[in-house]
Length: 131
Image (cartoon, rainbow, N blue to C red):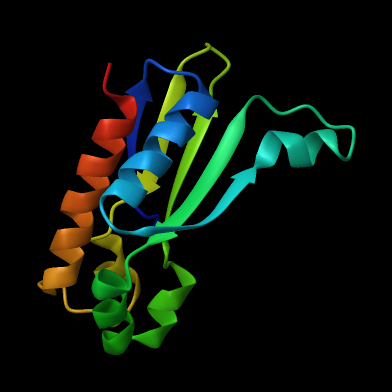
């Protein structure tokens, strides 16, 4: 089964959306672990890729209980959000629904941390794409 991907359109550029998401994450007390510019990596091998940035971030207060339930959930944590410009010029923010951690790992679907992750991702990405 494929994981559900939540997608939101952004009125900002990929770079600005990533900057805004970084600010929202850090403002919420979480940590940005990595910011990966996939387009720059592609350019490094003489390949073209529209602007695409992956932001990896987390909060151990939310992620640790999930990994205590199933350490293999560490394959999907910390959280990841990709921001990309489509062929139509629309910038999109996309991420896996945290509920999929329960579907893909031995994590109880009613684990409080999953609900908190869902709310946090919605709020943080909402701040990143706000006008």
